[in-house]
Image 1: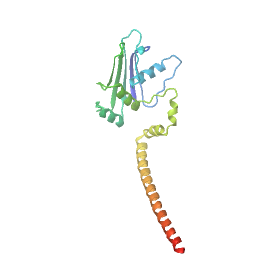
Image 2: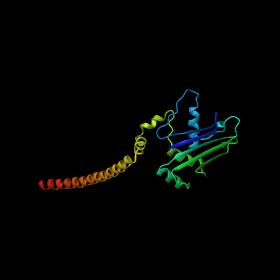
Image 3: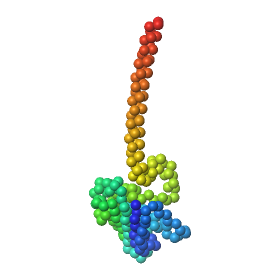
Length: 196
């Protein structure tokens, strides 16, 4: 979960810190209020392509930094990439200067934009225009519901186990039916031959 966002020299923003709390966050406001700038900054922090035209007029660079809390899945991913993930707090920083040179860090260690993008997709779900189409995906809906509470995750794991057992039992019964049907057909042929 995103806990805070620090934006420096990004578009019209000189320096701002946004603190967030648990639950959903919705940015609302008049046209031109800067909602898109906040979303663009967050998207760039999470791996979207950064452009020099987003650097504030008169500045030499922009910097976006986010502090996130991470679950076990994210900690495991960070560890697999070789990043320090001792606690469940992640600090991601993205900086770009006027010459187009940029740096990305996760907990102070340099990372690639691809790594940032991969981890970013796991950390935050940005909803933008036309994103509602994803709600039609049963896999997406299941993932959202399954992550809601640990109890649901446990029940989902139990269900998956029972469902797998059921599928195996069903396949075995179908196999037995084939054998029994095959034996019945053989017996039927033998009986017909006896009558001839």
